[in-house]
Amino acid sequence: MKFLVLIYGNPESRKVWDALSDEQKKEGMAGYAALHEALAARGELIASESLDDPATTKQVLIRDGLPMTTDGPFAEVKEQLAGFYLLDCDSLDRAVEIVGQIPEAPFSIVEVRPVRDLSAYT
Image (tube, rainbow, N blue to C red; front, side, top):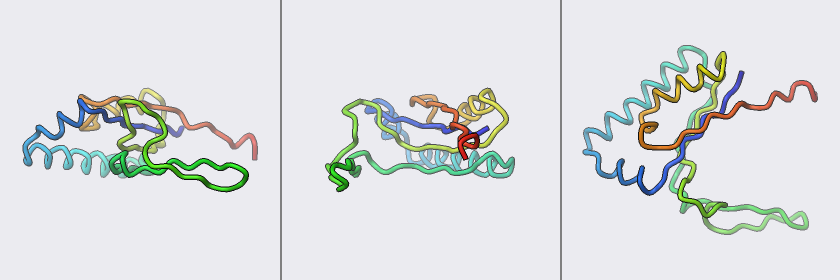
């Protein structure tokens, strides 16, 4: 089964990260690298990316067949998408277990969402 793990940041979680020492930040990034390697070794990792600052976002709307863009994230909310994992693992329970290994999870919001199986439509 495939699951999308969405990691959200907010001003409070950004303050926690900014307050960490350089050594603590290195440890956090090493934790991400170790998780990436472990998931890849188990065949559970499809993709994983850290996203740039939400201020660099372009919102794209298609109107009358033409793209229109505006700056900034789509929603005016505190939480912004910071990164994601696309996993292929046995169950929702396993995906939730993996979330516990994400270094940012203790001070962020993490959502696990099953990927819809569209094979019945092809």
